[in-house]
Image (cartoon, rainbow, N blue to C red; front, side, top):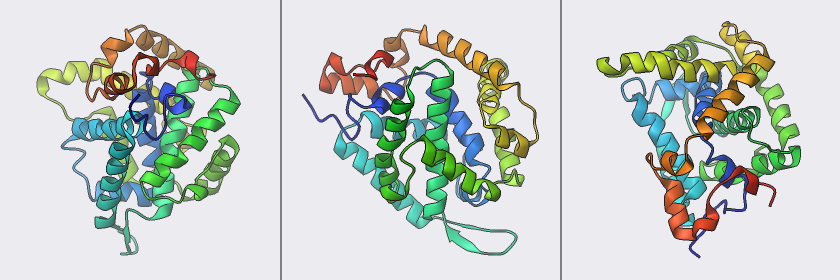
Length: 280
C-alpha cells in the first residue's frame, strides 16, 4: 500500500469528491463566495479569471483533487503554494481606501465554508446518501483542508450546527455588490471560442442555472433573481445526478486531472471511491 494521503479511502471526503455533481457544487460555491465583498474583491483585483475562466476552474479542481486523493507530500505542497500566493496578494476597498491581505483568516474562512457547504448540500440533494452523522464527519474532515490554506483548524466549523451558526453570524456582511454582479454575469456567459458558444448556451448555462438554483434562500434574495421552489430544485438536482452517475466512472475519471485513477494505481482497486463505502 502506498501513502493514502490526508483523507484516506475510509473518509467521507474520499467518496463524495469522486461524485460528478461536484462540478455543479463548485459553481454554487463561486456564486456563494462572491457575496462576501472583501473576499470577492480579492479575486477580482488579483485574478485574470475572466480571461482564463477554464484554466481557473481546472486549477481549483486540481487543488481539490490533489488534497483529496494525492499523497500527503503532494497535498502539503499544494497547501504551501496557496499560502505563499495569499501572502503576496492584497486588495483595496474602493469606498474606504483600506488595503488588506487576501489571506486574512475571516476571508479564508468564508471561502472555505462556502465551498464545503456547497459540496455537501449539492451532493446530498442530488441523491448522494449521507446521514447527518456522516455529514458532520465530512465537515469535520475538512478542518484538514482549512489548515492547508492557512486557517486554525480549531476556528473552523466541525459539524452542521456550527456551520449553520457561522452562516447566521456572517449573514449581515453579505451583499450582491458590483463584483458579485460581475461574477454572476461571468458564470452565465464565460468567454469561450466562437465555435463553442452554442455548446456553452446548451450545456454550461444549464449547469450555471442549476448551481444558482441550489443556493440558499438568502443568497437568492441578495442576487435578486428568482429561483424555483426548493423541492423543484431538489428534483432537478436528483435528475442531473442520476444522469451524470450513469456515465461509467472509469470514463469520467479519464478527464484531467486524473487524481482518482492515480490514487487507485497507488493504493489498489479497493480504494475506488463509491457512495456505498461511506458507511464502512
